[in-house]
Amino acid sequence: MNFDDTPEEAAFRAEVRAWIDANAPRELEPELKRAGFGGNGVTSVDPMVAAKAWQKKKAEAGWACLHWPKEYGGRGATPIQRVIWQQEEGPYGALGGVFIIGHGMCGPTVMAYASEEQKRRYLPPLAAGEEIWCQLFSEPAGGSDLAGLRTKAEKATDGSGDWIINGQKIWTSGAQYSDMAILITRTDPTVPKHKGLTMFFLSMKSPGIEIRPIKQANGQSGFNEVFFNDVRIPDAQRLGPVGGGWGVSLTTLMNERLSIGSGMSTGFPELFDLCCRLETPNGLAIDDRAVRSKLATWAIRTTGLKYNGFRSLSAISRGETPGPENSIGKLVAGATMQDIAAFALDLQAQMGIVNDPELSAANARFQAMLLRSPATRVEGGTDEILRNIIAERVLGLPADVRVDKDVPFNQIPTSGRQAAKS
Image 1 (cartoon, one colour):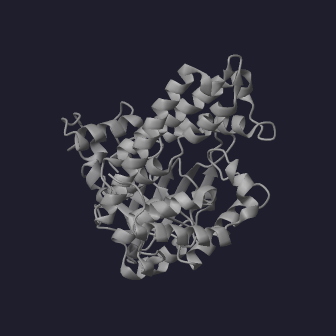
Image 2 (image 1 turned 60 degrees about the horizontal axis):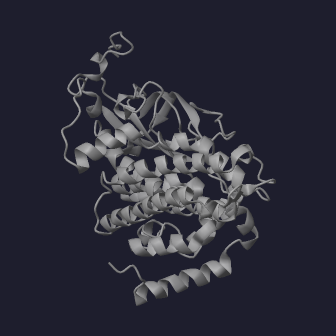
Image 3 (image 1 turned 30 degrees about the vertical axis):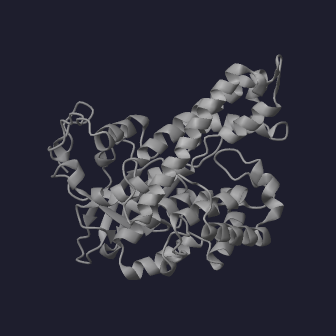
């Protein structure tokens, strides 16, 4: 297979490079290059303001959400053009971190299930960074079982056709600064758990929503608890049929694993750079045979992740929905990041515990990566869930025994007691 640019791709790359050279916020480049995992590293200005300004500039020139149709704020670009853009955007791509969930997960779901009027209303502002979206999926009692959710959506008794939402979500990334969200709820507890779900979208400014940030081990608060107290949603904001929410959520989940797996930084380039300049008692780290062996393993794995992502992009270009193979990328990337971060800290010995970018940007980056990396193996599906998906849907192995498969949700025992009937 030839991975060189075709003449058309080379021309597109030159166009991209010229536009970025003329428009990128060069004053932020040093900070962006020093960014640790979980943030864009910008401190000289408000990072949210900087992110929105760059996204808006891209949108005005037709470079936002390149693969989306033009009428929804995109460019109608091919998957390889999207890859070329990502390669050329370089460190400035870190400014788009706050938009990943909206662009990579919520947007495709809205595009697949919302009305044409809604798509034209919500997708262009989403692409331009004017509105930020989050996804309200995980719950405290559900663990890795998304279909075990308990947030209820019930029809209003006033005859309006609206839905009234009560319940709680947890681990919601970016809820504290999001404008809109997609929300999966339980609308029928009397049927098996996968069949009684319904998906909606709503404003995060809706009355009755309370957001509580969660303090993380790395000092950040990217995750949140979200509480719903009689939140009203019009039926027109339902995505898919009543009771069909599980099918809608699969669109989100497959795109989520594509976005996380293909866009997740494993830390390998940073580790390689560190090894090339880190002095050890026996010389440069890169000269150590054991270190080179580790680097070779991670280089192969990182390359495999890249081309697995290309395979998924090719499927999208054919009009196909991202499939279960995206679970491979997410599974491998999460474990690789954690291994690399731990190795980098061990390699630095006592200096590995330094978490001050003023003293050493590399040290701070790897410590932040290690503290954040366990979450990458939970969000978007735990390692165990992903292995089941790969085994059953990619390799065709027998499915796990699921004793609650055909049991009505309100009859599934919880914590040793029979679940409530309502």
